Length: 527
Figure 1 (cartoon, rainbow, N blue to C red):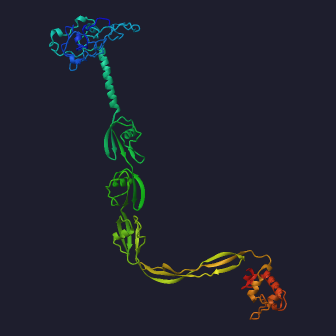
Figure 2 (cartoon, helix red, strand yellow):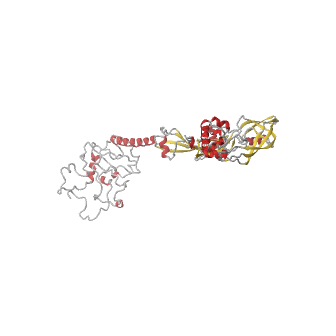
Figure 3 (cartoon, rainbow, N blue to C red):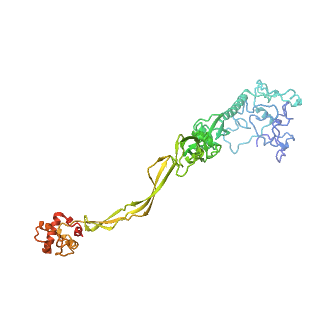
C-alpha cells in the first residue's frame, strides 16, 4: 500500500474504535469532539476509547461528511449537500483520491492511496457562505458552556474559503430544501385532491366511503354494491363522481299484486307494502289488504291482494240499500248489507262475482211450482254403402227407435210477475236406437234384360205365369192389368201368353215407366 499508513506497525487486528467525524477536527480549537455525536458510529462499543489511529473502515466523503451537522435533538439544520464548487479540486468525484488519480486504465501495477488524514478531510469540507443567515443561531450560552479549547474556529481556513458554523445553510441549500418540501406538499395535495368522500345510500342505509374512482358506477363496483336493470341509481352510473356527494341506490323488487280481483306482475323500489302501493298509485285508504301494510318487501319480492273501498247499491223488496264495502264477492257484500236469500231467491248477478264500484244489484224474490213431462227423443239414421245393389236402392238393416226423457219445467213468479215456463232439468229414461240403412252403389245396367226379372216375378206371382190375383184384376208372372197389357201390344189376357212374351212385355213397361210400375216388388229388379 502506498502512502503513509495511519496504523501502528504492531497492528494485528481490527480497530478498537472508530473515531467520530467530530474527532477529525481535533486540530480545531473550537472542536466539539468532546460532545458525543448524535449519530452513532459503526463501532459504537468502542466509542469511549480514544486514540489517534484512523479507522480504515470509516467511509470516505470527498466533499466532507454530509451528516456532520445533523445532530438529532440539537438545533442543527445544515443541509448536507449545499456545496460551493468554486475551488473544489475534487470535481471529478474521486471519493478519497486526489484529482486525476483515475486517469488512464487501472492496471495490476496501480497503487491504492492511503486513507485521508483528518487535515485532508478538513480541506475537503463544503464551503458555506458565512454571510447568509440561517435563522438557526445557537442559543445564548450554548457555546459558552464548552471549554474554550473546544470551540470551533474558522481562522485556520481563511476568510475566503473557511467553513462557517454548522448552524448556517447556503442559499443553494435552501433552494433544494424548498424544492423537496414543495414536492412533498404537492404530492400530499394531489393525493387529497384525487380522494373523494362519498355517501352511499342503499335502500335507506347510508355509509361513508373514501374513493379515487372517477364515476358513480366505478365507486359502486369498488365498494361491492351490485346493481341491475330493475334498480334505480342516482346519479346515473356513468356520471362523474363528485366529492362530498351522495349516491342513492334503490333495489327493484318483484310483486304479484291482485287489486280488486285483477292480478298483475310489477317491479317496485319501495321497501314496505304501503310504500309499494303508493309507488303504484293504488289507493289504500279504507282498503283491505291480505298482509299488514307495514310488512317489509324483501329483494325476492312477494305477493298479496288489495280490495279497495267501493260503493254499490242493492235493490231488494222494493227498497234501495247502499253499501260501502271492500268485499271480494257479491255474497260477502250481501252479508254485510244484511240481505238473506230464501228458497229460490238469487241476486241478479252471480253470487261469487266481484262487486264493481257503482254497481246496482237486484235481489230476485222467486216463487213457483215445477212440472215433469215425458218427451220423445228422435232416433238418428246411419247409412252404409252397399256395392251389391244398384244405385238408388235402399235397404233398412236396423229399424230406428225413439228414446224417452223426463223434463222438469218451472212455472215461476219473480217479484210478483209470472214468468214463462222454464226447463229446469232433463233426465233420459230410454236411449234412442239409431236406424241403419244400406244404400246401393252398384251402377245401373245398360241392358234391361240384365235386371233380375225372376226376382220380380217371384215377388209378384210366386213365379206362376197363370196366376190371377183374388180380385181378378191382375194376371200372369208380373200381374199385368188387361188395359196395361193391351197398351203394350198384347192380346187377350196376360196369363194366357207364354212366360217369354210376358217377360218381353214387362221389359217394355220398365223402359217406358221404370220400376215404379211395381211399387211393392219393383226393387227386386236390382237385387
